[in-house]
Length: 192
Image (cartoon, rainbow, N blue to C red):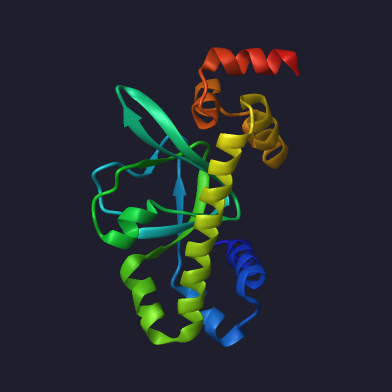
């Protein structure tokens, strides 16, 4: 594994919980390096989610299928954790798909390994709690944007957060994420 990827995870963890050198070494060594080609699935609906992923390069889309359409729940890029978290926590089959939008590199940790860390010490429990809180905050912020902003404002917000990657995404993926039809997104792009 590229040592830079572990450094990237360490930097994220340092920002989240602060540096913990003894704990960090055993925790970071539990992560496995994985790659996903563009359009490959990290998980499919109906499968049990066994991993928590830290994206180091690339990005993913979380979505569910309804009446033959993909309904995008979220887009995740480098320096973020991603998982079918409800399945991961409840040990029930996933209701969502997570698909690589680009060639994607990630570090992942298995559910059983993470649970062993949680039982081992308080620092691990703190990491788990902070991760769950981070997902809750991200979900709530997305819901607030969705309910309080126009489609154009949501597009501009997304463009500001990930400009280089958004330009590479298909219109239908971005439109689904924004909750609009692809034709509406095309009109918004023409107006800007």
